[in-house]
Amino acid sequence: MTVGGKPVRASLRLTPSGLATGTLTAGGLKADVIAIGGDTFIKAGPAFWRDYVPEVANGGYYAGRWSKAPKSVPGFDVPDVLGPKAIARLLAKAPAEPPKENVNGVPAYRIKAQGAEYLMTAAAPHRLLSVHAGGPNAPLFSAAPVQAPAALFAELRPRVAKLGGATDPGVRFEPGSLTFGNCDQNPNGCTVSVPATLSAPKGKVPDGARAQLLATITSQGTELGACTESKQVPADRRLVLRCTVTSKRWRNWMRSALDNPGSYPYGATAHVVGEAVSADEVDKLLARVDRERAAVVKPQPATPATPGPTGSREPSGRPEVATSQTPGRP
Image (cartoon, rainbow, N blue to C red; front, top):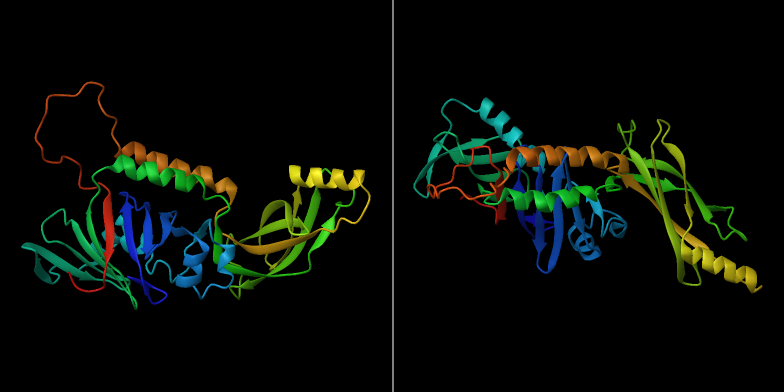
């Protein structure tokens, strides 16, 4: 697949319900990927955002943390294209006799939908062979059963646990002038306030849209501390965000200034970004992961039973792994 006109390889593992975890690899750059709650999230460094997502202004604001994937990354919508529920809906709407072809000796159906094209075995239970997402430079995914579902959840759960505060590049703000409150001669903390107005998207405020303030206080190039706060965006699109720096560095710096009279200038930088996942949503997302893990990953018996057949006995609803290839037909 390509992102930003450059080649990227994606490797994803999916659960039966459509939760996903994996990576995007572009040369020496890598981005982690997860999908949960109907959204896809990525975590990548500044170089990835700069080189592969140039259309997102101030990509550095989103680097090094989980962010809702922009439409151009990773070039497909995991829940709507690769999710088992989406595929099941597609099968329900498929013609009685979809086009059939041979794929490496296996009879297969090619089923086209608005967002993607699917290739699956003609014989029940219609195992997924590949997915070609729609759109320019769309990826082609090959699919295979996940051999170690426990490893999938071992990777997915810690990632979901860190989603609190994940940003949303699609929700943007115009910040006002930064002001300080209760900072002078106060070793206990310094409050930063920033008014902001929702600038994108236009029109009605999206349901659940949130703003997040990221503020850092410095003195002559030395960081004294940082703080953050988030709020839901009201209907009039305007709000004021405040957070207080209470770090040890601030306390020590202020106490030194009080003990040694002189000039001690300080300042702050602040960014207001969209927030995709609030901190109090994480427990619900983790509970969803845990429920599916309990259903999919069966506990191992304490004493091994007599060796049975070597063939797999996993149900057809087991997780699938998807790996992208250069766009084209299988």
